[in-house]
Image 1 (cartoon, one colour):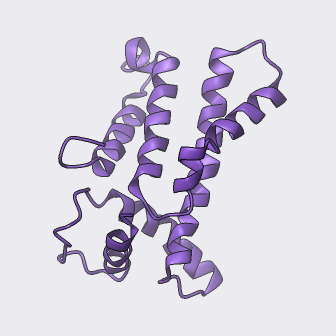
Image 2: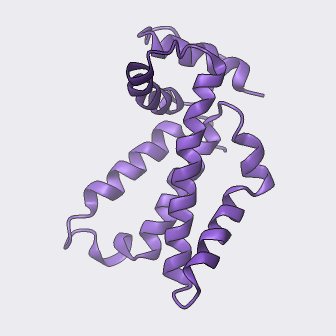
Length: 159
């Protein structure tokens, strides 16, 4: 998979080497920035040497928890009469869908891209994008989410 290219590049970013880029990588550096944002505080708290593939994969736990939460909120919005426990189990089932679950164990940009796409769906389902964006000050949330989608997307125009 792409992990053999992403891990060395992520280590370069973690150590502060931003001017070297592997030409085989076609994605913007969003994956590395999100991973570093998670690992730096974690390494300061635990005093662990986080420059190992297992530690970089640890950031996927944050992705998984975030995805369960966002999907839960989407389901709450669309199925208001359902029991909360059923919605929580449904969001867990969707998050552990075989395609998403398999990628949970690899250092890949697709996980984070999926999370921000789910956030986009949540924002759209709450009609923040359609009518409330300027009147309630949500433009910062939407623009930040769109920026995250941009730095995680492929540069060749396909996912």
